[in-house]
Length: 184
Image 1 (cartoon, rainbow, N blue to C red):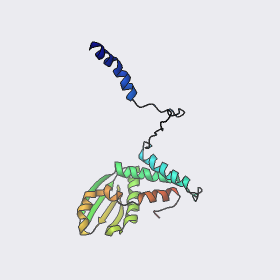
Image 2: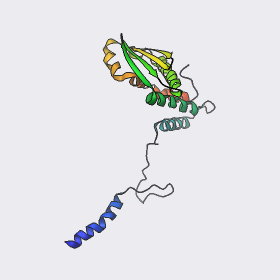
Image 3: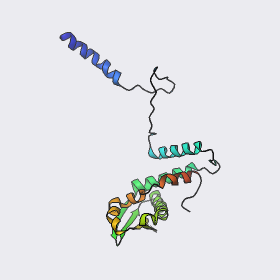
Image 4: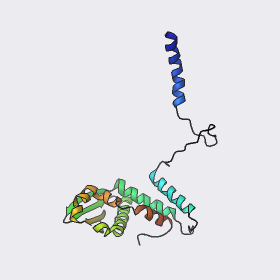
């Protein structure tokens, strides 16, 4: 019994090592019969969005590379990050909707102004929701009026939920990368 216990203690580290994932070496070949598994996440959301757009552009033989502007997309993603993570929001119920006073300092303030104006212009009228944007001293004011049946939804979404609504963002990012100007 003592020998079995001793063997178990001595073999435990070997068994643990066998369960550890192998380190990936770019030039190493996978073991015979085993498919190599690579990670699918590039590690950062903005980088992933840019990587996806670059892949789409490279796969499209109609891409006009003289107009492509990935830096413009990167700047837009910076604006999105600033508004999502650093803006301050004061939400006030109004008749038929909400008023969002969105503020920030420096680069965040500029991002707020660009994002709120662009979103209001893009989404005004969609689903019966009406948007109005105005600059303020420290950012922007977004006024959203909705059908009475959507008031509770609007309050639940809040400012960032309203900004994220709609699946237009992906097409919008592709337009920016292609050198088109969706906000003009």
